[in-house]
Length: 80
Image (cartoon, rainbow, N blue to C red):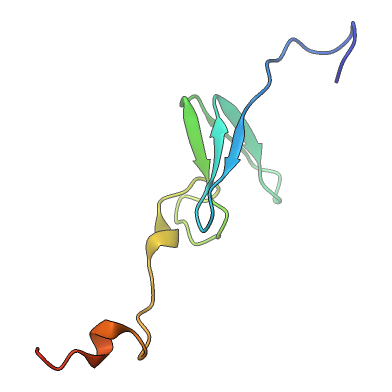
């Protein structure tokens, strides 16, 4: 929004982290698809992009969990 009638807001930086959350400069107000409003007054807010978070819409680093496949080097380590 621009012009005389635009609300007095400063621009926010949004950073998309590959395989991670979306970082948004705070404070923020998020409205989820079910209409619930979530607010945070933190300096930077991590918004979940993978939907694994137990704190959705906020990131709880659940995206870091990996399922070990049979092709992983650890699966073929016979020294254990």
